[in-house]
Length: 208
Image (tube, rainbow, N blue to C red; front, top):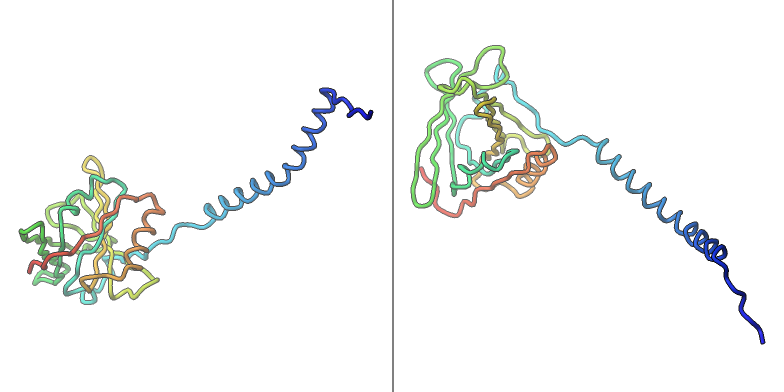
């Protein structure tokens, strides 16, 4: 009768080491793949938009009607006002006062319409627009290169502490912007940590 050899504890350990050795290349490959993927993420900076300097801004290029489509922020609380809106349309125009821009808005909230009016000053040597009555608030304009720049614009409203506020708002020349423009807008700022996002539903008739 042939007897199977008896395996001692040491022989079991040798088999375990062999098994571990067989799986090491697989684990090492997975680890290297993970390290590479993390390096790709870190080495590729977030996409961004191009800032327009208010000091050299030609207002005539941006006069007329703009439809407010979406907004992003680093804090959800800063978007609560926008979540109340169904639609908003703004008209940008110059005034009799040099270096002054007037932005009138018609906002629909439920079945009601409300009007807003904001006056911005273009101050020499400053990149941002100055909101009249709110000297601590700065407004910056941004455009993108991946789409037709004349069809949309991004307005950033920012304010330091104690009333810290930083929101980017997307406006388009048409009532409904293409989905890829909205997607790029959301993803670009999400990459920078601004993950709170709102898109106006625009299901009701515009106020005018």
